Image (cartoon, rainbow, N blue to C red):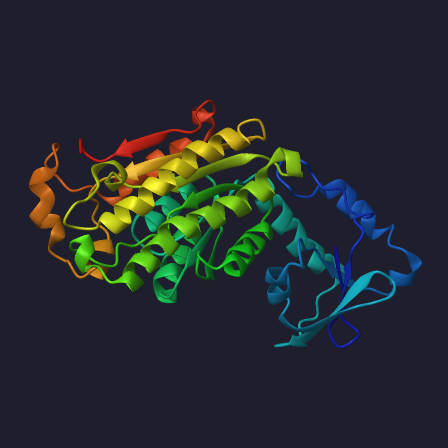
Length: 358
């Protein structure tokens, strides 16, 4: 619980004890009647506080921002609080009731919605999945590496449907960035879904001609990044670790079984590792409330081909596809959503091939 002292130059006390808020177990949200009751039950030493906001892990900076604040420093106190210093971009005159309305709106909209993290969510399959999941009521938190403008366009499109979304920069192969991604998502409630989508081929050609740096990059993003994100999801979702349960969908590739000779064996090998991860982790988490599955797309119209220097690849390989057409990101998103959802409640350790017959 964050207690905002408006009269003291924007200081915030972060209460480390949860004695004054009852947390709803189902979605990690907050039960509003005890929240309202807590206004009358604040301890005497905090009675001078004339406004308050609510936060999860490390505080909810998103709510600070609505009040015009930016955190500048933080220090612990002997009383068990953390004193957070904020700078004020503007001078709002929020009453306790006004802050309560902001908080109530946050709680009521966040509690019932699944919170799903989508890596590589700024384009292609990740973007299509974000929009599809938003249409099903999910709050989506997208990671992106460099193209902030693309990620923000997806966020804007999701918000236009009255769903909630956030874009978070970071490299999935960096464990600190992965932790930051999940911490940002936790501000919306307990994370219950992960779509491990970030990936690249980076080079088209025979393995003997593929630079070592490219091989390392492809393995780090496609396999190590997927491992790190799945690891963090297991930590926060597992019912054995106090989590709510949930589902992980790893975006693999038909290349994992086809091998992609003369094109990107390095990518195929990394995706085969993703398939092994899916099977093994599904068994680890099966009795911990977390299902783990994969989707294996075939040849799909995304920017991955041009990024590897082969913008004409789609037309060149179209004849290989038994259905006679290239897949679209919108062909893949519903399969991911199904594996995340309750209709797939007895499905774990599976790889669903969505490849037009390849």
